[in-house]
Image (tube, rainbow, N blue to C red; front, side):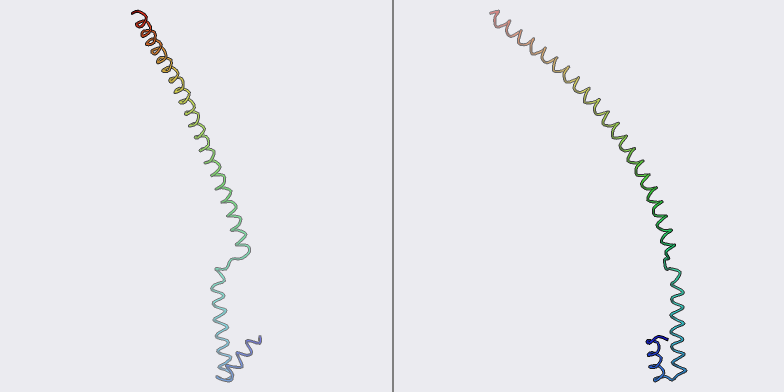
Length: 121
């Protein structure tokens, strides 16, 4: 018996008697043992924690692998869209230069017509 158990026994013995004190302490000890036995199943051991860590690492590796694949797919799609935009920009530049040339020709024709009319009189 520990000092606490002995002190508790002595208190109960003085109030209840020797047999009753033993019975009460035995009851408390049995109930405590039952509670511990019931809760022991929910306690995690080092082995449980080790298995959880292994499972976590495996899941983490799978998740990371999946994220890398998704990131690669997004990057590939982004590069494709950028290339399409580059082509559109190039086409737009060519079209803009074509229209600028047409307007320059039109302006030059208008200036020549105005100069001819001016000097014709």
